[in-house]
Image (cartoon, rainbow, N blue to C red; front, side, top):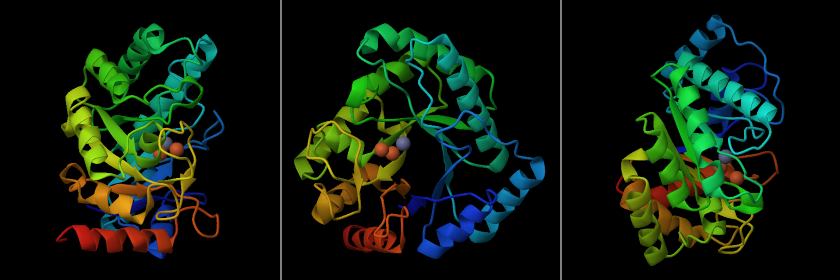
Length: 284
Ligand code: ZN
Ligand code: FE
Ligand code: FE
């Protein structure tokens, strides 16, 4: 189980490794493009090559990209759907070029139209992106907290999308805060077991490739996406002991997306805390 974090990459992709080393992260997630914009800079082959070399040198891997927040495969606006597919494709291409495992992204929101109604459109969009991108990068769906009609607060929804789109390149990232806010009580041994059994039944545990490790500012079932530093929220330190002791997570990278004690993003204290919990609950 690697303890990793989302880190910045401004100033060039390669700079992500310095930031990771500064906080002790063993795996990373970065943005391949500004998260709130459709525009993206062109990243040249030399920069990709340097990044792959950096990964090898530092041993910091796996690497994941996180897609822009603007992506919405469930939108009813054709222009936004096209831009979403283009942005996702560009990120999958970049993931392949830099040796990242794939792109973790928020599937989108149907804004109340209903999951069943938008399912065929999401599946078609994913198939289009899969067809147009290199085979060696995954497309990784993240579960949601459920606010505003966001897709994927129920594991069965992610399962339905993956089953219909039917590609081994479709994977899942489980965000602990989103799951907790969606009503999965991961902080409790029985709740964690139930959630992972449901994951296995609806999606298949083999599809789980990453975990976003975040505590929650929102109570169980609160339905809102609000990350808290580890041990400072409703999941709590004890909750993370439960989560990290679960066999389903034993081989997975944990990626912090917490505000940090200085509000500058994932930091050393959060990484250290997860490492100490890992020490306690595993033999590694
Ligand atoms: Zn996310
Ligand atoms: Fe997340
Ligand atoms: Fe989130």
